[in-house]
Length: 202
View 1 (cartoon, rainbow, N blue to C red):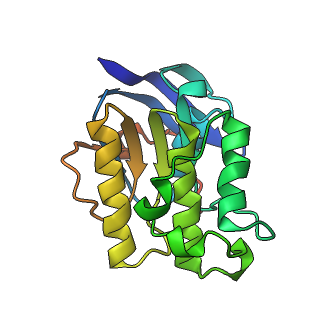
View 2 (view 1 turned 135 degrees about the horizontal axis):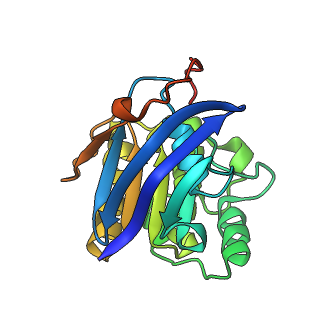
View 3 (view 1 turned 45 degrees about the vertical axis):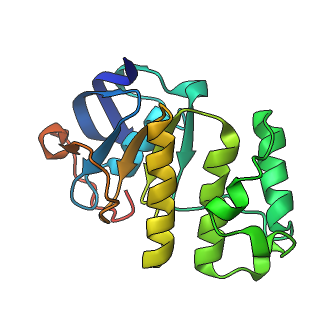
């Protein structure tokens, strides 16, 4: 069954249309990989699906309260420990922190460490661990492996495959192979006619 369906979606950044006519379906238990050059609007699309900015037109089903968004920023609070960060997110989402999240993201030895003292890769793993705390089945992932070494990338990819095997869904913008058996969607055909923005962080 479809977990995420997008129809005739148009979105913009800073008032400038980037994408139009975007449509796809991601069934439960599967992922879809977003492809496209820098500036085409991958981040803008994910932010629109996450409800962080309005769409110009079109419909989205299966996102909203069913989805969790992970951007380039991990949302980590530097003054809190690893354990306190996860507890904060659990309280925010009305869930409990699964004990398995610590070994899954190699955080067991870092539980008491203030997040501000972690390396970039460790902070990234902590930020991604939030996904396991949300309890939400649909994941909107924007370059999730930024700052991760090969080992941590493989660690996250393994967790993501487990999420999909449990019936979850993922929409992933990435330039790094994650070993997922997933179709790809090239956003080039959906470039808006009025698109002129070349911001590399889209």
